[in-house]
View 1 (cartoon, rainbow, N blue to C red):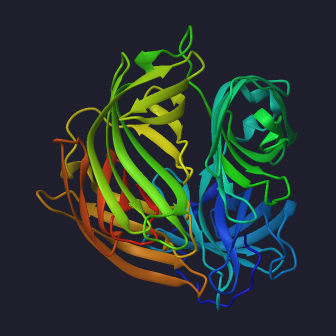
View 2 (view 1 turned 45 degrees about the vertical axis):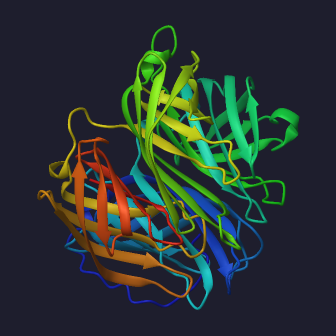
Amino acid sequence: MFFSLVFVSTARAQVNNAQLKGDYAFSFNGMTTGGGSASTPFAAVGRFTADGAGNLTNGELDSNGVGVSLAGVEKAVALAFTGSYSIGADHRGVINLNIPGGGILAFAMMANGNAKFVEVDASGGHGTVGSGSIEKVDTTTFNTARITGDYAFGAAGLDQSNNRTAIAGRFTANGAGVLSNGAADENMSGRFTTLNLFSGTYMVTDTSTGRGVMNLPPLVGGALQSLDFVFYVVNGGKLFAMESDAVSPLTPLLSGTVLQQQTPVGGFSSSALNGNTVMYLTGRTICPGGANAAPNVIAGLLSTNGIGVANLTYDQNCGGGSSSVTGLSGTYNISGNGRSVFQLGGAYVAAYLVRANEAFFIVPDSSVLFGFGEAQTAGAVTNSAVAGSYAGLATTAAALGVTIFSGEFTADGASPTGNLSGTEDIGAPSGPSLGVAANATYSISSTPTNGRGSITGTIGGSGVIYVVSASKFVVVSLSDSNPAVLIFEQ
């Protein structure tokens, strides 16, 4: 990330610079290309301080990737940096990083002071593209002792040959650097492994930046061997993590999140899933009729009754071939540590609960579907739930052809047809497209699937929308041959 030099006009009126102020952590996932259609995985995590007046200080980042980039380096370890930024009247901004080779990010502010961003410094088919999140941090949690209790985690990425791997699991941190009571499920290019118990270590190595390291031991059969991660603390309940091992044909570059579990007294039970969960998953595979690997994305609504019965409605786009499934019935079982197993129409899905109706999901399929699920707001969800201003982002691009954007959008909540309009900043290997107007219409119903609807326009083409709450919704295109999960959040 941020290791290519390109000259692009990013001038933006600095009328809202105070919106980005304080200490932040960030996570980035993307791809680097040296020309043509070939690409290799790239990821980064880090932190900085914004002064509210356009200056970044106390920056530090770790990155990992394959080979040598344009600036002669792909892997950075605790690299110090400074930078500058500007935020315009529409809450879209640009960050310029002072690092080897330079780096330019376009970002969209959220109402809570966090932001979503894309890298926009690739040019002429060379450089890095991808997306990520910037979140405010609690600096009082920058020590090992503040990372304590039960945690769920999820991470995914590609190896040197662009084969996909994902892992989801949980552990208990003792506040003194030891991880115990571990469990994990891992899908490595379609080879699915369940690990019932493992231990590990962790430490916040720099209490001024919140940087730390974590080691998870070999999985069953040593399929992934020892996993070493670097992380940056967001708060005591959230870490941005990236694998620091050298990427190879057998070692993927995993990046993801560690979240504190809200474990009930006595442990989780079937009652922890009781209601609606909006889930969104990403994979990568050779889709039916295709010749090359393409994104495989799913969004859906999982309904559970608290006693082991589940029902799933979902929409899927694999390389442009779409399908919709309504009312797939099945069962689920939850262990005390939060590991959950679903049997849905003969399909098997594993999940690790963070809290009630919220979990990391992993599927033992050839495309390595992996993602997250969040509790849907109670009550009937229709067009009126999607109203106001949202920051939008194309997440976890699984192929180089994905349109990777961040932007600011406004929805009017009108019924029966709502209007969504905004401005996107797009990062592409050929070069960025900044300030692109985008619009769509949407129609959302509470029946037969609560909060599901259609969306049509230049935002995702012809697609489907699932509403999590009035402050968040998810879009998946059903027409794009290079789809991604699009997240819009206030």
